[in-house]
Amino acid sequence: MLLDTPSLYFRAFYGIPESITAPDGSPVNAVRGLIDMIATLVRHHSPTELVATMDADWRPAFRVAAIPTYKAHRVAHGDTEEVPATLVPQIAVIEQVLDALGIARLESAGYEADDVIGTLTHRADGAVDIVTGDRDLFQLVDDARPVRVLYTVRGIRNLQTVDEAFVADKYGIPGRAYADFATLRGDPSDGLPGVAGVGEKTAAALITRFGSLGALLEALDAGATDGFPAGSRTKLAAARDYLRVAPAVVEVASDAPLPDTDLALPRKPRDPEALVRLADQYGLDSPLNRLLEALGQR
Image (cartoon, rainbow, N blue to C red; front, side, top):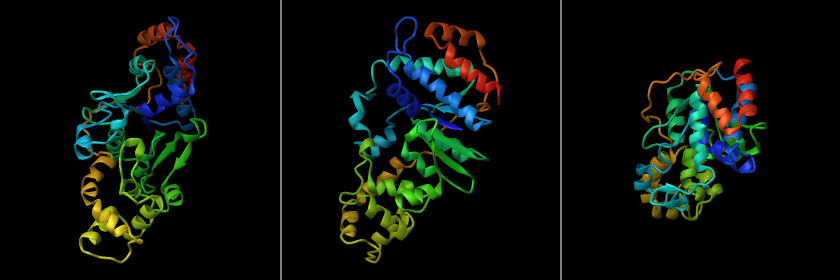
C-alpha cells in the first residue's frame, strides 16, 4: 500500500477543524486526521507493506523546464508552495510520528510523491494499492499485476476502487491510457494547458481511435486525416510543441532514486520512547492508540 501522503494530510487538514489542538494550543488536525486515516486503512485492508510517500520537491525543475506554467498558480513566493500557515509545522510532526512508528517514509530529491509511488509501483512484484485523491495516479492502474487506486474522493472509509474498468467507464478510454488522455485534455489544477479546443470528449475519441498519444502523433506527422474528429487535426498540429514535452510532465516517473528501505508494516513502534514524547507533546494519545491497536491486530 502506497500512501500519497501530501494528498492525505491536505484532506485531513481541510476535513478536521483547526480547533483540534495540542496542549500548547497549536493545531494538530492534519496530524490526528492522518493517523486515523492510516489506522482505518490498516484495519480494513491489512497491507503487508506500507509506504508514506512524500514530496521532496513539489514542483520539480524538469517539469517546470518543460511547461513553465506547471503548478505556477500555487507558488507563494520564489519556489515555495502556497500552504496554509497552520499546516506547515504539522508536516514535520507527521514525519516524526511516522518515523517513531517505524512506517516507511520515502522521498526522492527533485521528485514528487507521485514519482516515488510510480517508482515503487514499477518495482513491485505483487499487488499494489495506491491511496490518493489525485486523479493523475489513475495512469498506474494495471489489472494484470494488479495495481489499483483507492480514491479518497468519498472519504477514507468509503474509498472508490479505481481499476482499468473504472477508467474505461468513466472516461471512455482504454483502461491504461489515462496519462495520454490527461495530456490532451489538460489539467488547470496543475497548470497544464492541454490542447486548446480539445476537451474530454474529443480527447477520449482520439485516444480510443489511435490507442495512444504516440500513435496519434505518428498519424499527425504522417499527414493522415482519417480518425480525427472535425477540426481536431488543426488544433493538434498547432499544439505540437506542447505535445512534444507534455508527456514528461504528465507521466509519473518510474526511476526516481530511492534508498533500500524495509517497507514491512510494523507490528509495534520502532521508537516507543519518541512516540510517547510526541503523544504527550501534541495530545495524540487517542489516534495513536487506535493505530497501534490496528497494527497489533494484523
